[in-house]
Length: 140
Image 1 (cartoon, rainbow, N blue to C red):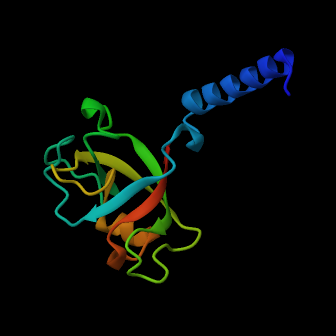
Image 2: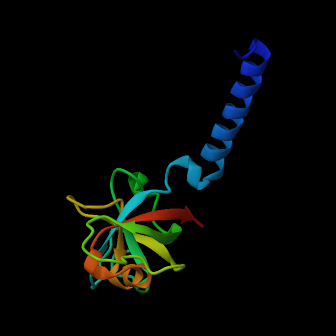
C-alpha cells in the first residue's frame, strides 16, 4: 500500500508531466492522432488569403479542432502519416516521410478529417488511394 508521502510524490510527478504536455505542444498533448484527408486544386480562393497563392504544400483546418476562429491561418505544421483508416491499401504510409504545410483555408462543412491536405502534400506522405489517414501533427 502506498504511503501518503509516496502518493503526494506521484501526484506531483503526474501534474508536472501533464503541465509539460499542455504547455509544450508535445504530441502527448493529444494532437498526435488526428485524421487527414486531401483536396484537389485549385487552392484559391481560400478563407485565409482570398486569391493570393501560397504554393501547393497547403492545408485546410477543420472548424472543431484546428481553425480556432481563423487563428490557424498561416500556421505551419509538420505532418507524418501513422497508418491508414480503411484497410483498402496494403501500405498506405510512405515510411519515414513528413511534409510541412501551411494552413490557408477552412475545411468546408462535412469535412471528413481534422486537416484537409493539398493533394500534393497528401501524396508526399501517403498513397492517395487510402483517402483518409491517421497522422501526427506538430506545429512549427
